[in-house]
Length: 262
Image 1 (cartoon, rainbow, N blue to C red):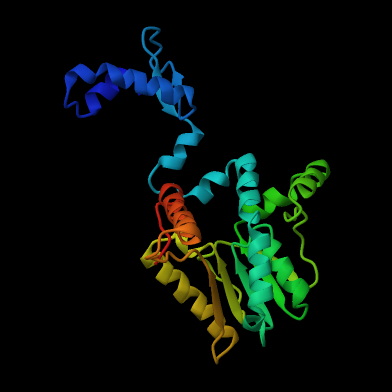
Image 2: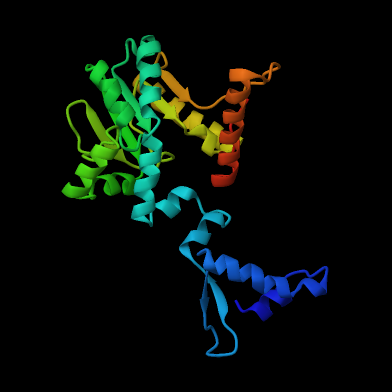
């Protein structure tokens, strides 16, 4: 779209500010959100087209869809998601062992690089764990190559790049809203904060059916998410903890337009 077309399309409350549109587009193009292009074979005026980066800001364009078309970004995203697994692993396995009692099977929804699942089956070898995620996540992790895999393993030892079925740890490349294998338990780590309330209800009903098919007496849905807690005493650790929770909430608002819950 050319600047003249933008001028005509935008509601201009103050005509004297029209020149600022060009200045705004200039910095956005320099930053990579738009690209300049001669649209009409007119040397006098270039137009602007969307780049891949700007697709993050488009409505109805999920982050997972965007990362699925950019392998480098997908790798960085998966590394980031795996980076906090050491803390979660220690808490879940050391402090919450009893939740795994009498379980024979577990589905780790959007388990990514399987860091958490591998830690679970190492401690509970009787447990069959199925990591569920989108196909491009597994493809990204298995196609990095031997040299890159060595570098990733050295820099991020918690990141497993050899994603192959092994023993009681398996993979299921499928959309989380599609059919899910029946199991005794479903693990939802950092999942529900990505979705609005109606979608969360749909997710929970979907997985309730999955555990009901496996165990008529009912199974377990394990949810790991940030819970916003109102602290009356805003000092010291309480202040820092609340600030971290609120920043997580802002991150969800910006990235996926959703929220952390109270």
